[in-house]
Length: 331
Image (tube, rainbow, N blue to C red; front, side, top):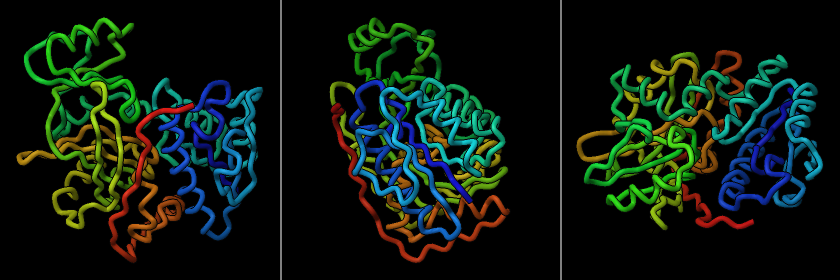
């Protein structure tokens, strides 16, 4: 099987502008981990898109297509999709990027090794995700559009409705913060408003297939708050060995979001009283980069097995793996 791998940030999505440092680092980590997974599978031939500024930083293990500033990256992607049997896009949800890539693969009739565009359209929108979670009685954080919000005492989070990670996310601690952020946002309908819940920030690495879900590992996300914004500093993969508090939640999410397929990450906030679902990421996440080291499970191999209706997850070890994430952007 000939597989095209396109990680948007490192693969040329920013070929006409400066690379965003922290996103490029996380993207590079995910790209290398995915390529390592795929290269270990017999019968797989890889085609990899790579921004020319990152030459030498990635061991592609296959044919490399270098993306230069003069290239139209979407045209190159489309051309390469037609030359391959299957495609594994990794991209942020903002600006509809991931959805557009998935739609292109579907329209060209190739095998998509991620959730379909319909799942991305749903889970990439935080308000729609919240509404679907509510419909299925899954505990989540109260969410509304920012343009309908009025300040009330307490701490709040304003975030982009389709943002990835901590991008365009702001902590509101008082009325002055509310007024300052409100005045800075050109289109308040692009943002949501949520109470700031104090708790342990964890995530679940999962596989999904037509209403079924399998939990691979539970992870810890460590953040710092810098200039009223959360900054992810570290992810501890396979942080908890006890899956019992999460198994029912994964099953409920699988049934509530039958569109999900393949790998997805679930962001949680845990308090003493409740586990809240914060976001669903229908793509590879930073936690993915530590799964093979932590569990000995080749996630890409599991995804390919799902194409044939098979899934045999057999961890051969159980170690916690710390994945460091750069805190500041640099060109």
